[in-house]
Image (tube, rainbow, N blue to C red):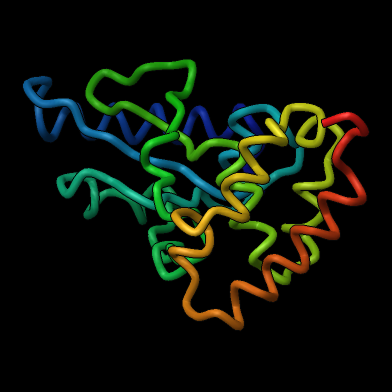
Length: 179
C-alpha cells in the first residue's frame, strides 16, 4: 500500500466524491468526517505520508465505497479517545465535493485523541512545530479537563487519569509561557 501525501489524499477524496456523485446523483449532500494523521495532513499541520484515511463519521450511503478508497472506519472503535462533543467543532476542508462535504475534527480534538493513544507516531504528530503553533491552548485545556468532554467520553476513570497525566506533561512541555 502506497503512502499518501497531501495531494494523494485530496486525489483519493475527489475520486470518492466522483464515484458517489455518479452512483447517487446530486440531489442529497453527503458527509465524511476525517480524523487522525490524515486529518492533520489535510489541514497541513504535518507533512508525513499516511497509508489510509481515518474517518469517524460517514453518511450511510458512502459506507460501501469507503474501503475502495482506503478510508478506514475502524477508528470508530476509539470514539472514547475523542472529547464527548467533538462533532460540535468539526471543520470543513477547504474544498467542496460535488456531493460530499468533507470535514475534519478540530485540531484540539485530534490532539486529545492522539494523547489518549500510546503510539509514538501519534505523540510525534502532536509535537510537530506547526501543530504546537496552531493549537488553541485554552480550548485544548478545557477539552482535556472538563467533565463534559474528554472525561465524559473516557472508558473509565483509570483511562482518563492516564490520559490526564500525559496531557499535563504535554502542556507543561509545550504550552507557550503566558498562555
